[in-house]
Image 1: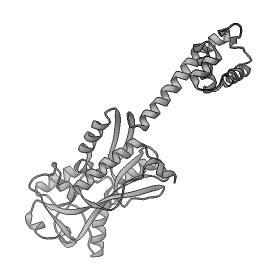
Image 2 (image 1 turned 180 degrees about the vertical axis):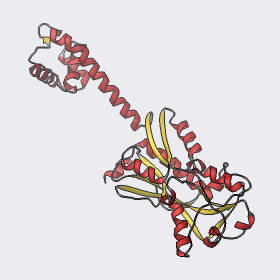
Image 3 (image 1 turned 90 degrees about the horizontal axis):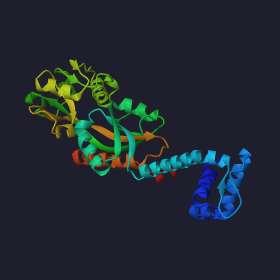
Image 4 (image 1 turned 135 degrees about the vertical axis):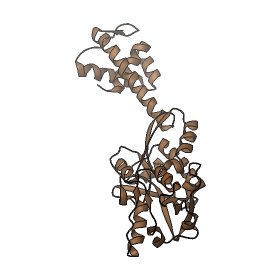
Length: 314
């Protein structure tokens, strides 16, 4: 029993003849006859009494009709749902975002996408970049926005922008000129993203610079979120690292001063997806919004967003 056979059966009942069913389905009358005959042969039961000008259901046909209608209607609704999703009309999409996405793009991204696609549900996971990588690898997330470097086994990486990393302090003297790693380690340091510690890409850059100078970077305070780190900095308890885009955010606290590093340091923000996967139009549209927002706030462009779905088959 196939959905095509059931469609032919329902159309024959509704039209009263195989000819009417053929017209409704856009096929030939012998095709409809063959489909229904195969259905009858499969179950070894006649479905119609073939006398007179109009078809009459047998007991078996009457029993099958309600089930056939339900199956055909369900299949049609499923097809409509996929067509609508392809047209970015409704459905659910899951995107992993870097932990500090709220400072970069998150509220604006959500608002812009919702205005364009009000019936699409967004599931946004604001995690550390390493957790986003695992979510994409496992298929829990369709794609992710991360800070590089990340382990790229089984992944495709599309760099979007570079954002300069700055040193932040409540003391103007600490950031009166470009900062060296020697100056960083000479004062109390506050670092965030404690769950992943030195796996964090930006932390690793700082640590490597300290090691190259024979120094050790030991934070006085470690917290989970950037907001908490900035609060401690504003109270004069230590200094921390921030990206330039964060300093341009309306959420950035007053009274915190920043300076670049003597040797400039950058975060590279990228889109990741599973290797050879095809992103849905909805997720591609969302990534386009993120890319545009990032380029407004950190315009050092280093790459392009993922290609549209058709391009991945080339």
